[in-house]
Structure formats: structure tokens, C-alpha cells
Length: 403
Ligand code: AMP
Ligand code: MG
Image 1 (cartoon, rainbow, N blue to C red):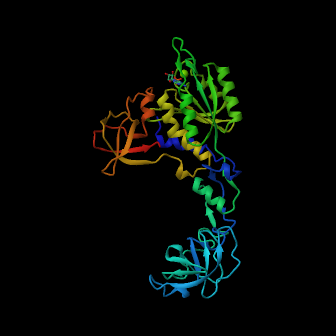
Image 2 (image 1 turned 90 degrees about the vertical axis):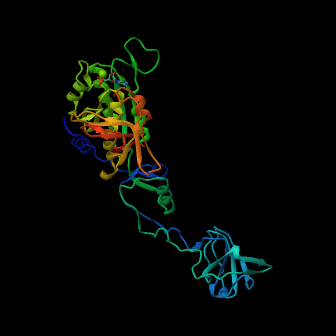
Image 3 (image 1 turned 135 degrees about the vertical axis):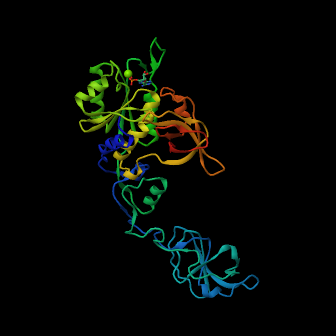
């Protein structure tokens, strides 16, 4: 057996970032920037008012107070979206709406709440300081400045910023296109079960994990335990995808042909990782395409995805090496997590929640067998229990958050 860190490093080291592509902003959400982005324009592009009110010379209303207002002559009204053409002179005010360009001559906004229109004049009941309620050009982002660094994951706000800074296309790493193949004579996709058959759940779960994590998931169906069928499926998959995930057929069984075929067509490492579940892991390159041979047991395949495939695929999609893994935080056990020492780290399926004491409390999500998918479905975290005697309730525990 090898340790988790060693196995993970081996996988991640062979998953290289995909070549950048230029995409329109519409396709940029969730992608990772491949180059620094420099603002093409000032944001905001011109000085404008942050409030509805009157653009004034602050000196004109220095003595304004409730009961003793200053009277100014209103020279016009400026809505947003219209250029300011008239300058504001001594004794004058320009009625102005939020977002309208700030006119020459004035140096402050008297907000509408402290004013009262009176014919062609306005009475202002409070002073303003120079600069009050004026948003300067480039105050948020200056033209030519770096907006985002390579490795930035583009969220909705980032896409908004790119739009505001006049960037129509950005260079990003593509989302990895990942094929998912189930293997096993016992598997059926739908319809009634014949004796000995089970339903293929891994494919649905793995496709779901990939889609949730923003990858481009491709359903490659089920391959029977037959060398030719498996070879065709694997070669077809590696020809059209950036990476492949298979489940089943990588253990020590008589019909585990995935192992045999991958050894023939790929450069594979067969690992026994010191963890539970998901001890067996096959990983290697077939024609340069990373192939993750995950174990067949439903919980094992999902945990193996989280621990190995997800970090590797994130690296391919351009995520920084510091941003590949699920976060692990310190929590406290609410249920009994005692165990026996056997050299393997246990990843228990747990429900984690923050309690009034400010701590993350974890409790078992149900049956912990590697075939008991229900607990994995209910879990939102994995409690990491090192080899040893485990933890009684109330003990500190590392918690890997899955959401
Ligand atoms: P294997 O790794 O092929 O020996 O499979 C280990 C266990 O996982 C067996 O009980 C299989 O029936 C089960 N299994 C394999 N593939 C799937 C799948 N796609 N969906 C559900 N169970 C599976
Ligand atoms: Mg099998």
C-alpha cells in the first residue's frame, strides 16, 4: 500500500493544464483564466453622480441649513446616458440623476433629499463638501491596470467586471471533457433485472459529480466484461475525450479485463492506496490521455473521484495547484467514530453542520459499507479518521467538506 499523498501526487503530476482557448464572456463562467486580464477602459468611464440631486459649487451652499436655505438658479436637467454640455456657474445648479456625467464647473452634489424646487430655482438646506457623491472616472478600475491574474476562477462578478472593462473575449483553460464508462456483465442501464443483475449507479453518480464540478461529462455507457468490447470503448473514449473515468474491473477478480486492456494500451500504475474506501486505483495515460480506473463499489468510486480524479481534472481545467482539493477543516465528532488500527485512513460519510458553539459538528450519515451509497448521497463531508483507535464522541476530527 502507498499513502494517499503519494498516490494523489502521482495522479495530479500527470494531469497537465489543457491549452488555453479564447471564449466570449458568455462561455467564461466557471472557467479559469489562462492569462492576466488588463482593463481596456476606465470603470466608470467618466466622472458621474452617485445620487439624484443638484450639481453645485460647494462654496455657493456653504452656509445652507434647515430654515436658512441657499437659493440657486436651475439651469437644466441631466438624465443618465446624456453628455453634460453646460457648465455650472456661480449661483447655479444643474438637476442631475444618478449615473449622469458630472458637469464642468460644479464640484459637489446636493442630494435631492435636502432640496426643494421653487419655480426656476432650488432651495438647498444643507452644505456639501467638494467631491460629495461624485464617482471619479476609473475609481473602480483604471484603464491599463491588471484586473485579474492567471488562475482566477471566473464567477458571475468576474464576468460582470470583464464586461464593464470592455473585454469581450478572454483566454481560459477549457473545461476538461471527461468520458465515463461503467464496466461489468452484471450491470443494466434500465428495465427489469434478471437474476444476478444490478443497476448501473456509478455512471449516473460519476456523470453527476463531473457536471456539478463544471466539467464536460460524456456518457460512454456500459462495457461488458469482454476484452474486445473494453478495448474498443477505451480507445474510442480516449480518442474523443481529454480524460476518462472507468469504474469496476480494476480489482483482483477473474473477469477484471479493464486492468488487462489498460495495461496493453496504456502506461498504467496500479495502486493500493492506504485508505478506506477506495483502496484500489488504476491511473495512467492512454495515448497521453489520463485514465482514472476507479473501483466498482459505488461509494468507493465516488470517494475515489473526490480524492484523485477531481484534483487531477481541476488541474487540467487550469485551477492552480493550491486550489485543487476540497477544503479540510477541524470539526468535532457527535457520533462514535472509534475504529481499529489497520494502516488505512478511513473517510467516513458524515453530515457536517455549524452549531451555536461556532464549531463544525459531524455525525455519521448512515451505513458505512462501500456498497451503501445512501450514506454517501446524504453526506456533505467526509470525516478523516487516521489509522488508530478512532474518535469517541466529542473528539476533534478533520472534516473534508464536499459542498
Ligand atoms: P468490481 O470492481 O468490478 O469487482 O466491482 C466491485 C463491486 O462494485 C461489485 O459488487 C460490482 O457489482 C459493483 N459495481 C461495479 N460497477 C458498478 C456500477 N457501475 N454500478 C453499481 N455497482 C457497480
Ligand atoms: Mg466487475
